[in-house]
Image: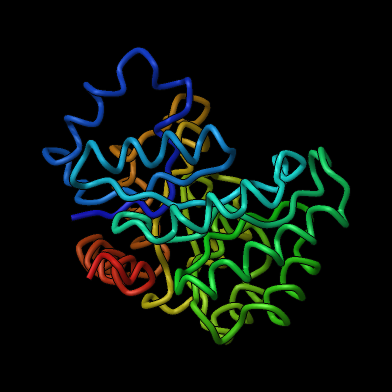
Amino acid sequence: MIFDTHAHYDDEAFEEDREELLAQMESAGIGGIVNVGASVRGIRASQELAERYPFVWAAVGAHPDEVGSLDEETLQWMYGLCQKPKTVAVGEIGLDYYWDKESHELQKQWLIRQLEMAKETGLPVNIHSREAAQDTFDIMKEHHAGTTGGIIHCFSSSAQMALEYVKLGYYIGIGGVVTFKNARVMKEVAAAVPLDRIVVETDCPYLAPAPNRGKRNSSIYLPLVIEEIARIRGVSAQEVEEATWENAHRVYKKLQ
């Protein structure tokens, strides 16, 4: 079975056929999905999906583009959700200097606050980092490494940095980008990171793997990601599937 460690089925892209699509997951070999909160609305929707579907779990967190909406009351509400049985992570949290919707200082402030929430509630983290590789790494090393662990989601930096994260105890999230012909760096990451530190993800509805690039993504396309990782590493797809399933259960400890 395949475990999708990062999805957004609450997204409006799934409004017309969400129920029908999720009903296909088991027959498609998808055994588990973590629906990741990104905004207050997304956090609520992730909780609802986790309550409705036995194979869906939730992550609680505010994406760096959304931290301007946070306040102490909202943070306390998030703390409460972290205690729920099907909340398995704090995420997605991090830094995004590409869109720059919030100031870098505000992004850093709320990343650190949410890392503290993860430590206090015993949950791993799901980290977003875009055009902010060094700042993200420095904050993770100073404020979280060696505590509750987590996933560096949709990893987009160098293989060298991926290995530095592995040294700190983190898992590397690999998705559809690894299948793109021009994704040389991601292919290097897939080759370099130990298999016991790789998890697979969709970030759906975004980043569909080739040959579906540009279309709406879903967990059903994850075999294409697994096959590409297997090809790069010179192992069987079954080996990658089994390893990434086990890795997801190790990082998201509440699944065990």
